[in-house]
Amino acid sequence: MNVEDSTAIASRLCAACGMCCDGTMFQIVRMQPGDSAAELGRLGLKIRCRDGEFFMEQPCSALKEMKCTIYEKRPTRCRLFHCQQLRRVETGDATESEATAMIVETRELVECVRGLIEQSGLREDGQALPERFERVMATPVDVKLEPEMAAVREDLGNAMQKLRMRINREFRPPPGAE
Ligand code: SF4
Ligand code: SF4
Image (tube, rainbow, N blue to C red; front, top):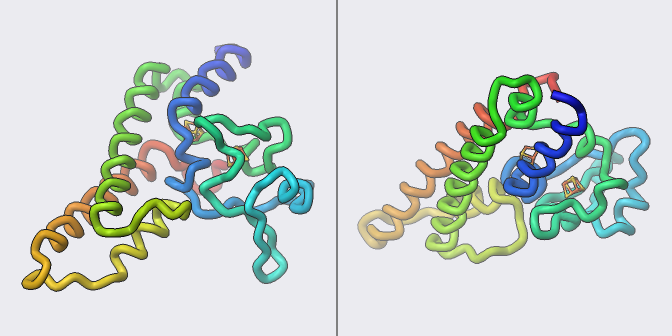
């Protein structure tokens, strides 16, 4: 596959997905040498500093309607990141339609987790999905006093486990491959 074809396919797949930018897969993106935290902050990214290390928080504020609005100026890690679905299509191990189907199915799982978090009483608050999940799960529920809430909690735990396994198996690059 030539570079032009693979860039066009990646652009279509990412426009249907957004999971590496919207707080589903990551909570933070670390700044790398060559990234200007000050400039990226001026572009609206949520830049933070801890122990002298700069990073940006997700969900990324540059993601609008599944598109990166600062594409030409995005941080280094965003430039280098290729999820497994993109890699498989590039190497011919998956077709674009197979990757699209995987993205659609996984996004459904994300929506299921989001719905169960809302049912658990935590409204959308602009935080990354894993963080919202942990906050819900940290609040104890008494099965005898709140059996319906306990059932929602169990469904949420199962859905999040399924989502994590899916992301690790199908999207996250193997260690050292980024
Ligand atoms: S996870 Fe992959 S397909 Fe989805 S937006 Fe990120 S790079 Fe694109
Ligand atoms: S800067 Fe662009 S590519 Fe990077 S996380 Fe934000 S939306 Fe995604």
